[in-house]
Image 1 (spheres, rainbow, N blue to C red):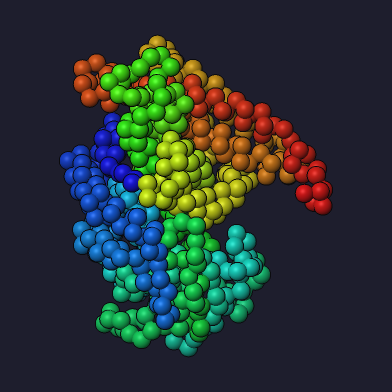
Image 2: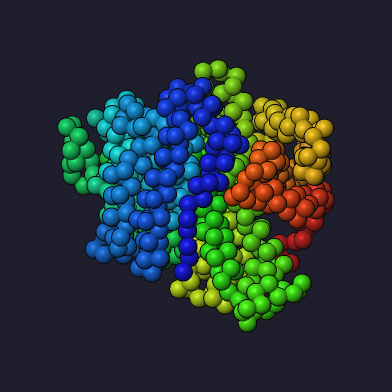
Length: 595
C-alpha cells in the first residue's frame, strides 16, 4: 500500500529558510497577514486534512472510477465527503480575493496545500484546481456583474469551474475549433458545439458547474484571432443568486482512461446554451491563458506530487524488504538478509527521487513567490522582473516536472520489484496517474517549443538575459566561499553551458527555423537541470552553517543530497549541450515514407 506523510519540514525549509517568505509577503498588500506562525499553522492543518481525510479516498477512486448513468456523472465513494471537508475548512478560499469571500493570503501558500492534495488524491484535487483556474480567469477578465454572481460560489467551493478548449479535430491547434456563439437580444450568447477531454465537465460534487468555453462569433476571423471565451453555467442563475433552469449543457459520455479514474473526463455537448462573454470579442485566448498559465504550473506540480508519494512509498519498502547482503558486509547480521536500502542501485533510484523532489519544491516555491510579486507588488519594475521569471519558467515547470515525476514513479516501482507491478501495493496507480500530466495542458514538446520559439526571443531576449544574470549574480556572490566550492563549481559550469546554448540557438535558428524545434526539448531539460542545481546550491548555502548542532540530521541530509545532485544528475547538462547542437538534419532528413 502506498504511504504519504506531508513533507512539512521541507516545505518550512523552503518557505522560511530558503525564500524568507514572511519578509517577502510583508511587502505585498494582504501578505502581511502571512506570519511564520500562520504559515506553519496552515501547513499543519492542511497536512492533517490531506493525510486523514483525502488520502484514504485515492485507492477507492482508482478502483471504482467515475460512473455515467442516465446522462449524469457520479464520482467514487468518499469523494463527496472529502470535497465537503475541503470546502468546509475554507481551503478553496485561501488565496482568493476577500471581496468575493476569499482569505486574501498569498498564492504561494495555496501552492503548498495543492501539492498535499495532489499527492493524496490527484483525481479529487483536479476538481478544485480547475475551479481555482476558472476563478483566476473570471477575476482577471470578467465583468463586474459576472464576478459578483459567480466568484463567491467558486471561492467557497459550492460551484466548480472547468475550461473547455479541445474538440475532436482541434487539440493543440485551437485555431481549428468549430464551436459557435451567436449573440442574443439580451446581451447573452447562444453557444453550440461539442468539446472533448473536459476534466470535471460533469460531476456530483458541486451544485453548479461553470464552463469556460472557447467559441467563434459569426463574424470571427479564421484561426486563433477569431476565438472568444464564454461563461456557460450548467444551471442558469436567477437574479437573486439562486439556481434556475438547466442550461443547454449535457455530458455525452465519459472516457475510460489509463489513470486519474476518479476525475471525470467528459464529452460535453452545448446545444443553444446560454453563455456570457468573458473579456473582449475575438480575444478569448488572452482570457483563457490567464487560466491556462495558472493550470500549467499546477500540472507541473502534479509531477512533483505523485513523485513524492512514490518516493516515500519506495523508501518505506526499501527499509523493510530484506534481500541479499551488502557488498561491504552484512548490515543486519541478525537477519537472513539485509534491507535493500543498503544496495547502491536502490540508493541511486531513491536519491534520484529525493534530489529531484526537493529541488522541484524549492523551484516551484520560488516561482510561486514571484507570481505573488508580479500581481501584488507596488513597484512596476519589480512586478515586471517577477513576471519575466514566471513567464520564462512556466513551460520548464510544466514539462520537466511532469517528465521527471513520471520517471521517479517508474524508478520507485522498480524499487518494489514485482510487488510494484501488483495493484494492491499502490505504486502502479501512481505510474498511471502521473502519465497524463505530460500530455494535458499542452504536450510537453509544445511547451519546449514555447520556451525556445517564444520565450527566448520575447522582449529581445530580456527574459532569459535577466534569468542568466540572476544565476551569475549568485555565483559571483559565493565565488570565494570555500565551503560552497563543491556546489558552486559544477553549477558555474552548467550555467556557462546554458548561456552558450542560448546564444547558439539564436544564431542557428536564424539560418534554419527547424533548429528551434530540433533543439527545444534538450534546451528545456538543460534549463530545468540548471535551475534545480541553482536551488540545490542555494539550499546548501542555507544548510552549511546549521549542520553543527542539528541533532535531527535534516541539514546534513540536505548537503548530502545536494552533493548527489551535483555529481550524479547535473552532469546530464554536458550531454544536452552536445545533443542540442547536433543540428536539425539528424531529425528532419529521413523521408516520411521511411518511418
